[in-house]
Length: 246
Image (tube, rainbow, N blue to C red; front, side):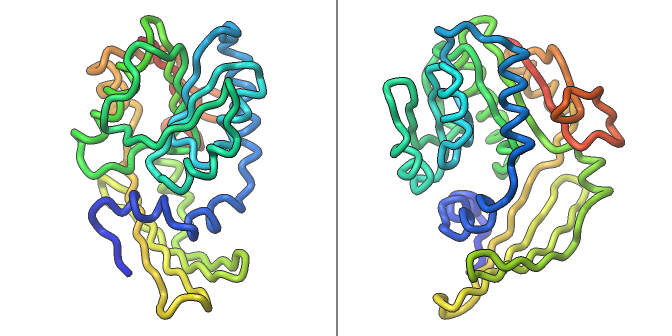
């Protein structure tokens, strides 16, 4: 099965996506979330939103710190699973970031683990930033954790084979001037024939984000290059972490 148009809507909602990605060690991102909250020090009555929340693990982590938190994700199956975690301070909604969400509602928005840049067009990606900007109150804060393009190019593993929970994944990665690509071929005894998906991630630079954010009334305040708040080096940093303010 080859998925081209809106591949993310199909792939992100596939049980094989969960099998492949949610077995990975995400302790670094989880630890960063705690550190960034400590750094930002939101008041306890702050309203937080976790963008691309998947099954809600990090959303719950924010709620466990004492905040009222909303998680949104495009994949219905992810939200269905996340809703088992709901409390009076932890909420989940299936939503497409390209469309408006709540207006002037949240104090802080988080996009962690490269959960942005999958949409097909510049307009769609801009619409997602617009949604976040509109959903934040005046002086609201948006934290974006993205890959650093040059580091990702220099450290790309072109071919990889994984066996996870009895499922074989054959992964091929490459890039061109504008995007990173990842072809995933899935072999499972339960399948009549292998499945194939191709991920496509935009190569956004700090300048690209600066333009998109400022166009939507969000100004970058701080930039970091790793999960320990190291200085951002365009050639060497593993991450591109931005804190923007409305």
